[in-house]
Amino acid sequence: MWGPGIYFSSKAIYSKSYAYKLTSKECAYYQNKLVFLLCEVATGKCVNLAPNNGLKEPPYGYDCVVGK
Image (cartoon, rainbow, N blue to C red; front, side, top):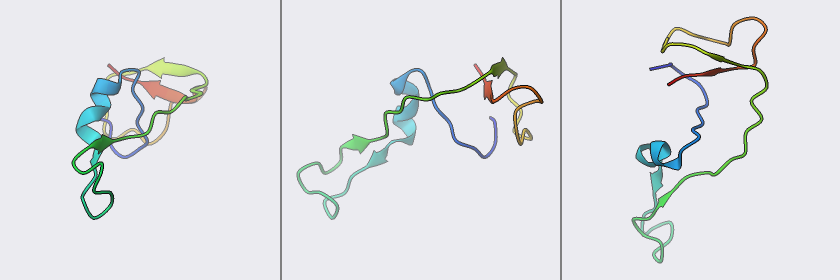
């Protein structure tokens, strides 16, 4: 959808499909549990754009890109 980068979502459910599943080798007690980071993100000045997997950085004057 957008290409390489670091992605964040305002809704945790969107991140569920990217979550890491723990194995018994890592932690038997939490085996098969999904884990992902919960982050507070300072975005700076945002611009809304349509999906573009060729985008390498936000347009001049913006700090991040918001997509729907």
